[in-house]
Amino acid sequence: MEWLTAPLPWPVPQAWQLTGWTLVGYCGALLFGSRWLVQFWASRRAGRPVIPRLFWYMSVLGSLMALSYFLLSPQRDSVGALQNLFPAFTAGYSLYLDIRHRGWSGRKGDARGEPW
Image (cartoon, rainbow, N blue to C red; front, side, top):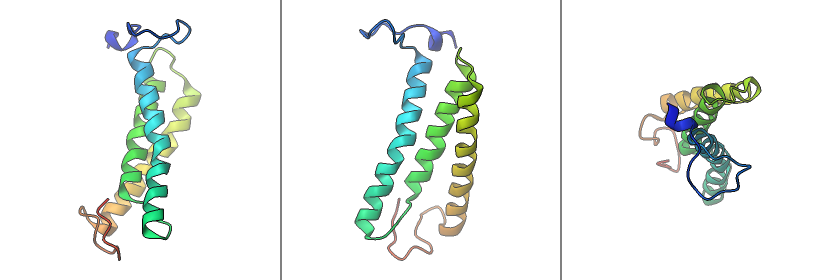
């Protein structure tokens, strides 16, 4: 795991010190934040409030990536870890309920049959 802590040779300002762990944290934050664009697009398309399954997948993956950054990187930030632990659990449980309710295909019980 040393390769994740080594500074990347990319041309960025020295104050940033971009590492593999930093990229994991950025990707997790971007994934977790962009899930709202997916939800907005699905609701606009359906003409009603909709939370597509992709929203929950992005929530789980983004939370786990950010959580791994806060737990496993040299920063070891307990505040960030705690901040991402509860959303990861909640999103995982919501995804479980969605799969249980609509099945793996995502069509069962959904009037529009949204596949995602």
